Length: 172
Ligand code: NI
Image 1 (tube, rainbow, N blue to C red):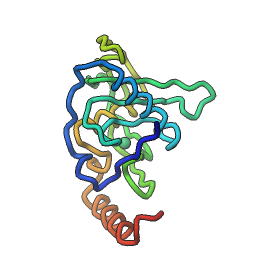
Image 2 (tube, rainbow, N blue to C red; image 1 turned 90 degrees about the horizontal axis):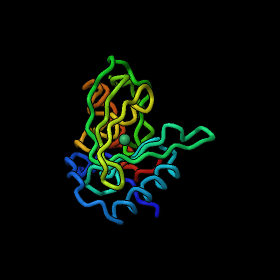
Image 3 (cartoon, rainbow, N blue to C red; image 1 turned 90 degrees about the vertical axis):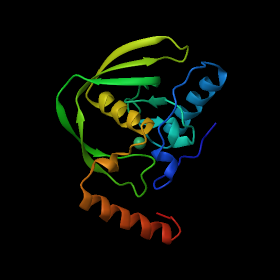
């Protein structure tokens, strides 16, 4: 099922999402719908708060644009930064309107502790693009957007563009 994606400046994107404790059909349905929504929206990741569910679930596919897809689901993910600081170039987000993009500081290698769809505890190391996507999506679970990490000047320029866009009916 396709889910509507919530966009900035909706205040619900600032909420801290709650851990998942029951691994039932509703969680499987949510993960499936989120993957479907992510693929249709041309994204490489989506977090539950972006579809109005304040729970700690993210989906990603770093291979979205490759011939072999690689859909992944992470529940209650916890990140440990184990690499070096890098710049993630041209980062964007399905919840950030006007296709806005910016260079964002990230880490190039992370260890992720998470639960799979069955509730089993897993640990995995990610490098490069997948690591960047996971950091971006876990930020959503903590109520953070990538535009919270840009300079004040860039942020205020962006905010005035969004205000104008909303005033004009929110049509791109
Ligand atoms: Ni995002």
